[in-house]
Image (cartoon, rainbow, N blue to C red; front, side, top):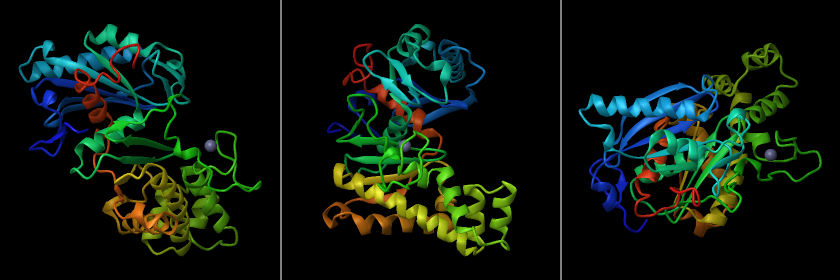
Length: 354
Ligand SMILES: [Zn+2]
């Protein structure tokens, strides 16, 4: 974004945002709905989370989010009028022309619902809907020290999501499914693993949580006398326990992590060649301990090495790969900041351009 300026708090903001006001970020997940009251210069100033499953309709969820915003505004001595906009991040494929979620496996009750209309009815302020991976990527993009205008954030979990920022803008795609990196092909052979989407050889089948467990089981086939082998037989093995075993020196666990890093490196090299971003971030819980552990740091290094094996030097020269920094705040921050800028750049505020 050409009009970004660096605030004292590390968040890049626009001149319009600097004029003030507070914004609500709502990050709707299959399990939890995260809420954050956001000041464009200060970041998340109040946060909360609640179970998504208790809501029978999106309107019910939005009402709880609205009550949270008003309660927090009241707590700091401000009126409800100080809420200037709401950004709602949702999983799945969003039809931006109608504000309707087309496909969302973990929120079946929300599929086909007119979310934009429901949100504006409840909040009575301009509302912006965005895919959750893009919201998280935008939050990280706005928070990072200015490096460039391109960023890709891979969210590693049961599946592999990704949010893509190109020239400072979230990339949606004409059908709302740009950046479905989990479903790029990394093995085109007929015997490649079956992905949850029904097709074969996709990244998610190798580097998603179940893919990692499959890799581990394959490697443990002839092993009986290790803690990891016992976990696998008992159904207790998870990516987290694999990381713990690797930390204790288990060579098979370390091999599983290295192989997973290799798959991610291939996908990152693809992304680098196509988008030439300055920043690739690894977010999500399945990071083998992340920057806090030796195993997590080794995993990151292996991902970097794998990307270096496949991408052009010119692409690698200015592309950093790191762990995401904001954790659970990324989605609410990104959604709120996208709603904050809609007065100057209406990319997501109206029903015609959600
Ligand atoms: Zn797939």
